[in-house]
Every structure is written in structure tokens, then in C-alpha cells.
Image (cartoon, rainbow, N blue to C red; front, side, top):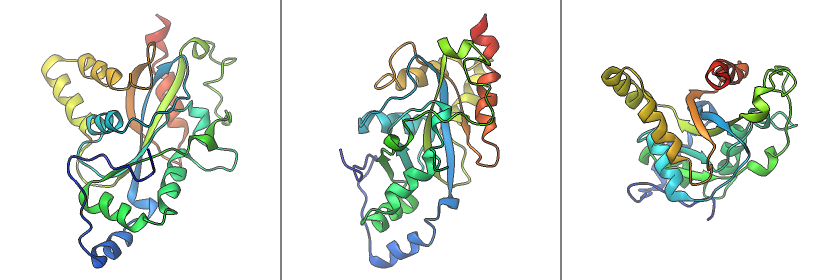
Length: 225
């Protein structure tokens, strides 16, 4: 599957050159949000090119929004490579340097298009951050339950993510969201088999990368019982 395999509910039609030019004015990386699904597994670094399944996962998490799907999971300490580039930045760059980038960004911005990229080879190495709380020495539990994240780059909008909408509905109805979270766990089975399971979904901020680690530390009590 190539970079420009498109998996959307409807076909993209590039209307005209003016439409493309208008879209590319808004294609800056600053117009994208960095989201990630996070959980625990035995092998945090996996890849897939299954467009249909990634489309299904994206829609359950994000909803009807354009974006860039990164066809890989990572250990949190793989999210920044030795050059200081994040997996989200690399995914954006991979699409941006393509000769059909105008059509791609027009589709993302105006058609809620979604594109699959795979920059994972540049992030295969573990690079421990100054925040070392996920290391085995500091928290041995993470040698058995290994943290992983699945990143998504989503074009900014004022609408809530599908995750927030569905999570809040289930909590309001049942007082918890275990069924919904289990549904998401089942949605990653196409490339993350058992014993992988989901803990949550959040936004990544370059100014505060340790918030990723906070999410795992906050869940320690659940797995230490």
C-alpha cells in the first residue's frame, strides 16, 4: 500500500486548482493536533498497512475529521528520534514532501480525508527522555506491562473527538466506560494482539511531553493489584 492510499467513506474529488491553492494556505503543521491512543502490551513497536482497519480505528477515536494516520505503535521513548523530531512531525513531513501534497492536504482540509503514512523506521530506537519514570529500573512494573502509544495527526476543528463523545455517553448511562474501552482494545487487534490493552486517549503537547508519562504513572495502581 502506498502513501496515497485513501480510506474514506466517499471518494475525494479535487475540484480545481483554486481549491488546492486555498487548502495549502492552511496546511501548516500548526493547524494539526497531535493525538495518541495509549495502553500496555508485550511488544510496543508494531506496524500495519491494513487501511480498512486503521480507518475503522481512526473513525472510532477521531470521528469525521481529516488527518494523517501513522501506521505504527511505539514505546513512548521512541516518539522522539535522535534528531529531535517527533513521530507526528515526521508523519506530516512525509506527506508534505510528496509531489501530490496539494491534493492530499486539500482532501484533508476540505473532504475530511485520511492518509496512511509509515515513518516508523526513523523511530525504531529507544531514546530515554530526561523523565525516566518509564524505565524498568525506576518502575519495574513496566518491564512486564510495556507502555505503547499509537499516534494520530488530526486537522484542527471545533468539534469533539469521537472518543470524548462516546466515552461521556457511556459514563453518563452506566457510570463507567469499560465496554467502550474494550471496544477500542478490540479495534487494535489487527496489529496489536493480546495481551495488549487500551488505557486511554489524549493529546500530545511538545511543551509538556511528560504528560504522556503521567498517563502511564497514573494507571500504575490498576496493574499492580
